[in-house]
Length: 230
Ligand SMILES: [Zn+2]
Image 1 (tube, rainbow, N blue to C red):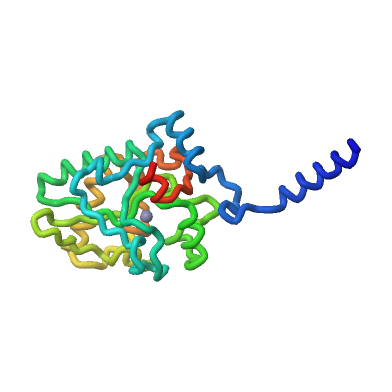
Image 2: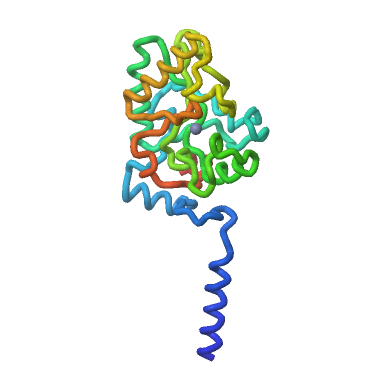
């Protein structure tokens, strides 16, 4: 009897090792339930995913992934929301305050992104220059990266940038300079304010910024609904 139990246990363990979780096929340390997330936040309050509209009242959002107008052609999020880990959101608030003096503001294009979206993006588009590898996850999954552009506060109009958001082209790179002077200046203004407040560029995409020590924030696969209803 004992021997049978032992054999069954071994078989279960062995087969268990070979079955990968389709939601986490590379076995990354991802918090996928609200319970896990809340434990992390209790241990380190800086990892709380905060609602950017609460930290920066009136912030302009244009969340393409909440519409079908994105490179996948289908809505990825059910709500046009932007969440970031608290220190990241607070740094962005200080940056926006400073930017206001020049009559400019941010328009947020994407922030925290659940890991499930990263898995799906990679299925749709395999080039890991523009889409994070699901083997490592995206800094967006950590709530420590933000995609954004600049607007004129008075008109709400976007400043002209080298390409539209998510244009997967060389022209989107900070290394691409064969563009009109005023557009280069807009790109440099965004970069200057972001770098002054602890963010760094991702060279292939003018719109993407990572916060200081971005990889120290945990990977999450918590939906917007769970965050909103919590
Ligand atoms: Zn990004």
